[in-house]
Image 1 (tube, helix red, strand yellow):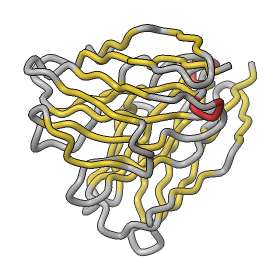
Image 2: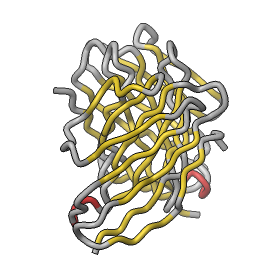
Image 3: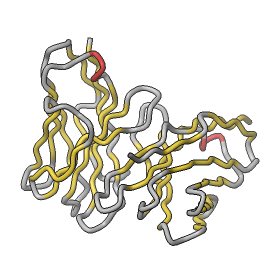
Length: 112
Length: 111
C-alpha cells in the first residue's frame, strides 16, 4: 500500500459528458501527477501540480484540467469526453525535492 | 523526445531467473525505475537506480544499468508464480521528475 487513494474505482460515462476523478496523496507529499494508461500501453503523463499550481503538462488537450487543494489532494477533470478517453487514470504523489513517485490504484473510466 | 522500449512478453518456469530488458533515449535521466502492475491494479514501485550507478541489488531483484548503451535490465531470481505481472521500465525527465514509461513486459511464470 502506497497511501495514495483514488475515487471512484470505476466509472462509465457517455461521449460528450464531463468527469471528475479524485486523488488523495500520501501523507507529507505535496506534489501530485496524473497519468493516463490506455489498454495495452504504458502510462502517459498528463500534468503535475505543486502547491496548487500546474507546473508541468504532457501532450494532452485543454479539456483535461486539474486542481490541487491546500491539503494536497487533487482532481482531474475531463470535459467533452471522447471514446479514446477510455483508460485507467493513475495519480502519483511525491515529496517536493525528491524524484520517486508512488501510485494509487487508479480509476477505470469507460466512455460509451 | 524521450522514448523507452521494452520487449513485450517473457515466459519462464517457476524457480528460474527472469531478465527483463529496457532501452531508453534520454541520457540526462537522473533515475530509472521498475514498476510492477498486476491485473486491474495500479503501479507498484519495485526498485530504482540512480544514473551514476551500474548495479543495485534488493533481495531477489538485481538492476543493471549500462549508461553508455542506455540499457537497463531487471533480473528476478527464483521467479515465483506471484511474480506474474506486467513490468514497466520508466525514466524521469531530468529537472521535471515526470516519468516516461515503456509499454511494459508481460511476465508469465508457469509452475
